[in-house]
Length: 190
Image 1 (spheres, one colour):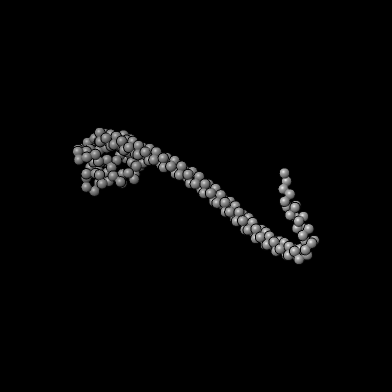
Image 2 (cartoon, rainbow, N blue to C red):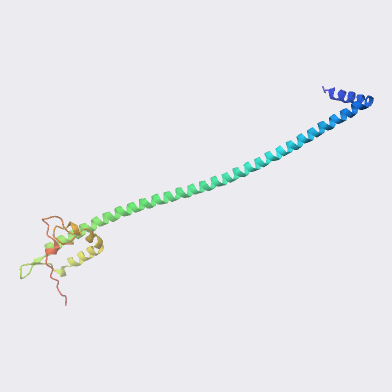
């Protein structure tokens, strides 16, 4: 059922205004004041609505800016993770290369010690009774080849020799003879 009260009130008001002109003027003034009040309120609500819309737009812009910053931070984080992975792989490769270099160095030292032993074994006494290495045997060239590869290593081990002022890298202890005390007599090939 519809409510007829507003219609009845409007009809009664209309009838009263026809009968009483002062009441009509008061009613019109009251209605105008109410209309001004509602217009003022409507203007305030529109301003408030505009202010809220501006705040929503500012919040939307802020959210968009933060989203872009978050995206940039994620990209930067991914780039740093990739760089960390690359550095980790690089450190792993350098560690493997260092291990291989140490292994190769040990092989070269073993080879040099072997060549040294061969030199000492092939040394023969000359007419004066001193031990002389025969260069034509090819061992000396092999020793030079091995020492040429590890030149820096030879300088680094100079303090290990038991003989004074010797830079020989082949010292194995006090009982082991040093190449410095082994006279070498180069043969001239003609």
